[in-house]
Picture 1: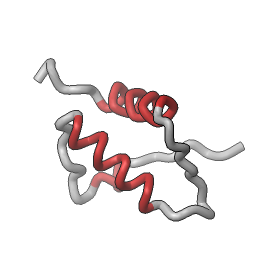
Picture 2 (picture 1 turned 90 degrees about the vertical axis):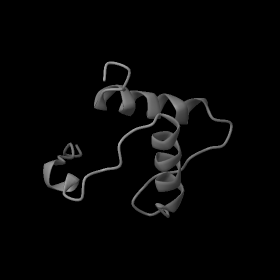
Picture 3 (picture 1 turned 90 degrees about the horizontal axis):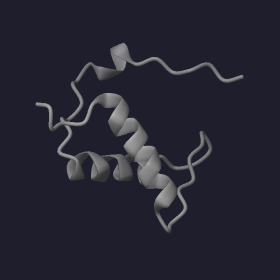
Picture 4 (picture 1 turned 45 degrees about the vertical axis):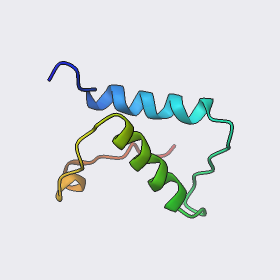
Length: 66
């Protein structure tokens, strides 16, 4: 199990990957989320990350915008 990325490593790795891609990725509440969802899926599959549990959003907390 030591070979698997931790959750925080995956988040940092995903953000790093987005910032090094040639294509721009636009993300906001006004944009279509399909593109980012596809990129998340691609990153997870590439890194052999587990598929989210059905109740994953019950434990999710978003930072409050300032």
